[in-house]
Image (cartoon, rainbow, N blue to C red; front, side):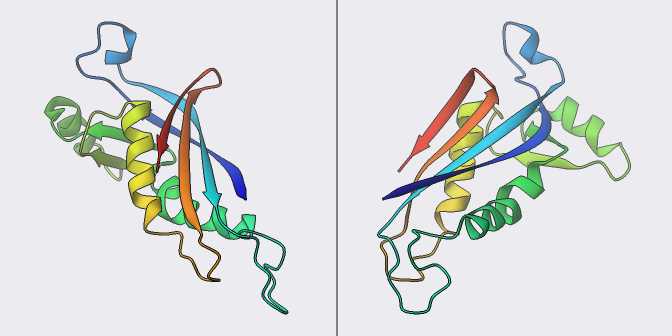
Length: 146
């Protein structure tokens, strides 16, 4: 069985060497979809009986591990020194330094890497992170798959 939940956040970024407007500082309303697979829990008297995982737990983990960190932040590539210096000059600015250029593809891969270790097989139901889908716009997204 698979389950999917969706969370949204706002963040800024730029693609430093891009040939169009994406090389400029700008932002998006991102949507993060998380798909998990596993057996339906059949534990007696467990709150999660009949579920793969409680959606509120899926969302809580994603918020703590990714969404709250990236929301209303500027995501900057660690080698983008000019922008990094600028952001560091702003008092109390929320900056997230990325190991790669923060494209939708790289952000989805980074979120997958982070979340893969966070979803635990607590109930012995073979819980597994299958996919992280990151929408950069309503019509454009990237999938990171297991």
